[in-house]
Image 1 (spheres, rainbow, N blue to C red):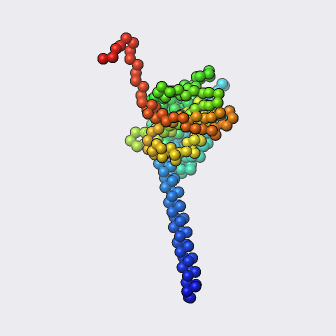
Image 2 (image 1 turned 120 degrees about the vertical axis):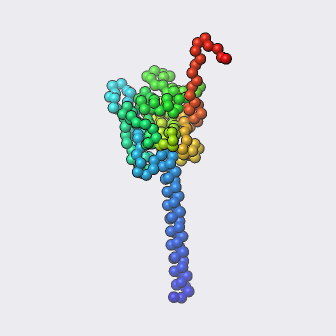
Image 3 (image 1 turned 90 degrees about the horizontal axis):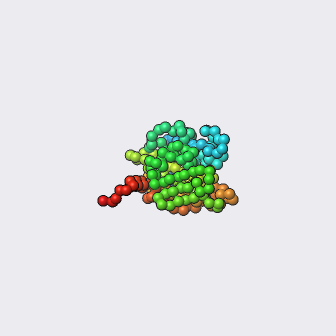
Length: 248
């Protein structure tokens, strides 16, 4: 073998080694990214996840009816779970009679349409009050002394992650003032979960209020963060002093 042939062979071997190292490095980076996502959502490969389904509260709706917007949101959530290599299990809000921490839970809808959501707010985010109703000004997300109301050109959605006791699997809440807001909150979670993990940690509790801008024109696509309300949300309101009592 002359020197020219040897140089060609050595060049091919070096190129193959470089390509193999590059492929291995990319594979490891992708694997680390996937593992970080799985850690944030509490979804190791092969695990199961509860997706708690709200009911429609429209006129004439059956107890098991789901709105079209909520159905779209549920499809996005199921896709997210499957991307992590886990298995989604859809459960009606009034049939999810089980404890916390054994499985990751993704809970959708307001407390009026989702009994499970009402229980999670009372337990994990006692500083949050979500009211719903048919009249103007009746759909309000209240956190501490801040109120987020429905306006002609905006609605809001509460997006939260609650850490469960003893390092159990987390609970995610997406509670919007409308079906479009629910869908917008889910899409924001799917699109920005890496940023959320960096900002709030992969194992902690956080609560955010997001604004859905002009949903009549843009649907669930225009979403922007309004406030990080974690501190107020986890703080249990102090009981009002009895009438006629005085401070010591």
